Length: 109
Image 1 (spheres, rainbow, N blue to C red):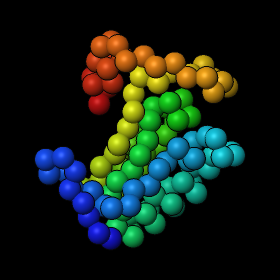
Image 2: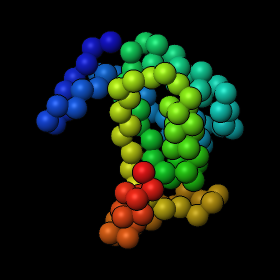
Image 3: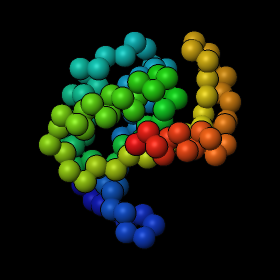
């Protein structure tokens, strides 16, 4: 798969994998199926995954973290978003771009 350089030297695959549907919005989630898709994406040369802590109320990033911890994948880049809040079962979003939210994300990594 072709690569591209973003910014000042971050090399990623030209095609990325959006992972939102692995946690909600498109039917019931299936972690085993999602991990199989992640494995296949890596086998095809994908190194760029898109996630957010709001997808599945943290499920998406936990799924990616567990997958990457147990895989042999190198050079994987994750694009994420933070500060988007929703109440469980609701779609309405609230943006909390405060320093408190951003600091909590920074120290959780």
